[in-house]
Image (cartoon, rainbow, N blue to C red; front, side):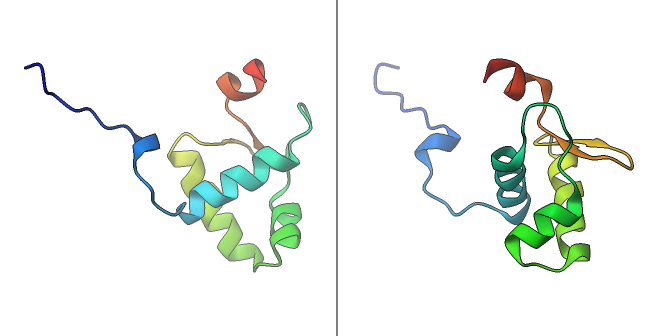
Length: 83
């Protein structure tokens, strides 16, 4: 099939989901070693702690973040190892 078109996520113009927004915020706040606390994300976004916590856990289930119990959130190894 010489006229086959392939699309990726990058080709789709869609708004970020809430878990993706939370992961992006953690990515901006992450210093490379210290986990980002849920409270700090909530304060930065001026959002309710419980709502932010829910979206962070959803981001974790999607593989966008790693949760360190009682410490905070980290970027997956592939992200902070490469940059």
